Image 1 (spheres, rainbow, N blue to C red):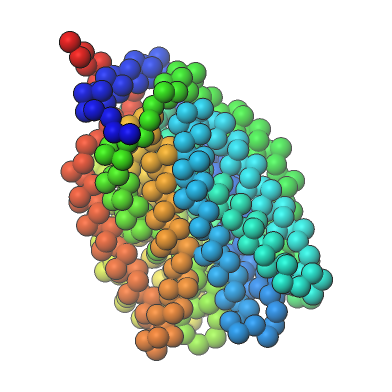
Image 2: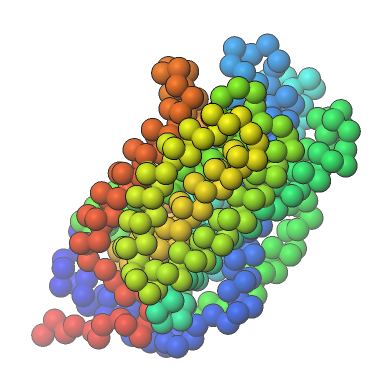
Length: 448
């Protein structure tokens, strides 16, 4: 049902009144890191799946499958993304109508259940093809949670950011994903060093997912400790989403997400499978994952801070343009040198350039939706962009490489994605923006 433009101003004015109750009530340092840590825990389980994909493939898929068992986990990885848009709609709307904090408690529970399920599912040798279907179900459960997590936590974090620091707070949010990558790489490397190959393949790879269950009380404590003022919750009770208000911003936001998610998942793919020749060693893959995570943390925070000085749009365009220009020569260096160290450095370079625009992208998208639509808008845009393009990136890269016979084909996909994102950003920048900080919200407009 469409909303008349005049009524939009009236409703938004009421939202401004509600938000004024918390004006100046920015999150303290402990609450910021509680949000980041909660986000890190959630994405840790998610990244562990990709980090240990080779072991999962051997455990849950038949050795004689027509598709290589090392690639089958990424098929499940891609299919699991189909539930993300559903999570974006359902959980995002729940966050907009019932509060960001309850939604975060829900997503934390769901992704933990998925991790426990993956840890406890018997191998293919025990229950046959049912194992693969169970893994798919648990991955889709995790995808449902991740689909709603980004909008819920980002809206709460950036709505209560300090004035003039929305880019930095967006950078904090994306840094949480980098920390999760670091932890996943470190955990995988520790298992590889400490356990014999037979034990790692048999049950050792399950330990990180079991760790997710052990950390449930910590995760729930962190999420419960985050303060969400009652005014922010009450303001959303009667709002309805209009396609006229949100349709085009949603489409453009999804395309903007494309520019950051494709490089990220191509990096994940290259880290596991390489570009040409033998796949990287397990040690190299784990170390590269950790280093890439560290670079992502630094670049996310730096890009967010820079955006608060020069503007969100400038940093986003620079990040995506630089990624498009650098990815092909960087991958060419990897192919020509056949060095795991060179590969790690080039992968970290691409990840860093892409991460520079991550925080500003989140902050910009949130500006394009009314406060009572923000969690839904960002969740759905993020879930759609990542689900359609990020989750399928490993399969697209593999298909392009086999079809063209060119080891650098995956770079084409990154270049196309970054270019689309720049175009989407230029169009989205012209769309109406809603202030993120309560002190900037307009006064109520009278209908006379």
